[in-house]
Image (cartoon, rainbow, N blue to C red; front, side, top):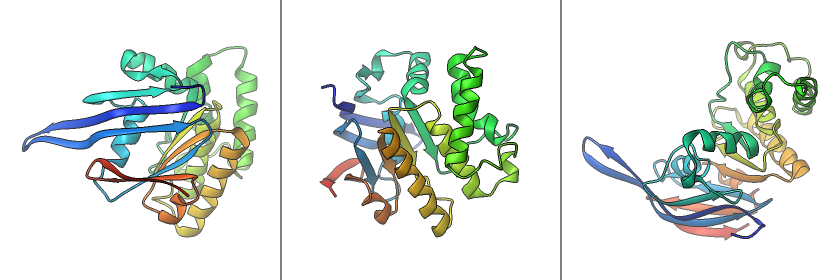
Length: 233
């Protein structure tokens, strides 16, 4: 793995034990993602896209194979170690937003920074960064609103600000526009790609939307848990 590789996946396999017997959802997947690259992962439902994303981010452990993220072999880390690595260099945007309902928009964005620094002298800088990002995504007038007081598009913009607040080296997006109408989805992805360019973040995007996928520099297609194509756009 060289200095320009942000993510390296080698012979990754994931099998679940079910009542009907073993179910393999990823089969011998190998890929490299360069630092600063934008990669879309597409394929039909059940092809293993979300499973691959979760394994790459260290949210789950593979049955076989290795994942090296930011020059660190995830298999050599404890669960706490993987959590620390994610907080240090990974951002997430999910289809269902995953905001904390009892926290305001500003408080939700601050969560990753508070997990990293605790109640430290950096608290003022943290809040400034969170406010700056909420303003960048057009929510400067919604800082004190709770998720239930926000539209779906607004909630997703809060989640985007939260994803970027720790200045991640890599951003994982899992169907980030899946719960949004077409106009809101387009605006959301303009923000994703805009912030990605501004901050030089590596992007790995899981999507059913082929038009969205083609905005990435590279598209991988999964079928039956295996890579069937890997193309530059």
